[in-house]
Image (cartoon, rainbow, N blue to C red; front, top):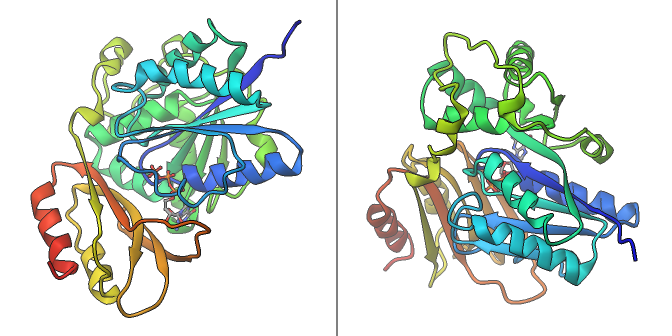
Length: 327
Ligand SMILES: Nc1nc2c(ncn2[C@@H]2O[C@H](COP(=O)(O)OP(=O)(O)OP(=O)(O)O)[C@@H](O)[C@H]2O)c(=O)[nH]1
């Protein structure tokens, strides 16, 4: 029997750029089109907050507590083969943690194709417009280098969160993106809102090393030796704290706490119960912006919070969280 080849798409982009927001739209789109979509999800934290809330009808494999491109790299191929053989999906999306190097995930997919009929069909990179602009203006650092790596690996770039920048800034970024990656299609979006069809059939992503080198502007300090890139991993420096709440917290005190999170915390998300209002809330914090959404889960969902960043003191943060909980 000649089985069909299952297309695999990688969804990458820095922490909090809007990948899950986009994935939810892709899931809805696939349902509408009668396609079976499976998800391979990687989180650096020990829990996947959003998956606790997703319905159970999307075949999903979770790779938690490490980075897909490094500690969990060997698992990509294995999990991919497993999900394809078990669920026979029409398409697979791999959502990587925001600190992953896409090239290494591409290798994992290539390895899987030795054992199952899968093929890499695209790399979609979601970019937080405000965050990229700020990092680019500073003009150096590991985070900027990783953002550019992710951009250079893309077959489609979604310039997201354009509500947080002006038109001129957006145009400036569109030029920079095309400079970093002349082969990708680029779309601007707010809340990752765009026609899902645009993300398919974008052509095979080229390995960045095979591309024309880009002309760096004065702000760009990344090395052009891509072999060297592969060995510099942001997550070698990243810390992630997972905190399980044992009590409810005051909502105002919690908002104030989020507002004064140290700069080294890039991303936080979790589920919390407030003492001054009923119900549980999903909270999100990404690059200085926070969001709350009341949730009504079908099953019991535990209160938990995950903080991801670089160089922050986990002990200090834990002490603050204990204090918030009145411990
Ligand atoms: N202002 C603004 N906020 C957005 C936009 N898109 C997403 N967000 C918010 O940004 C936060 C992070 O979005 P996610 O989709 O969870 O980001 P992510 O890339 O999946 O995050 P990680 O998986 O943790 O790296 C959430 O609070 C979203 O509601 C946008 O276009 N504008």
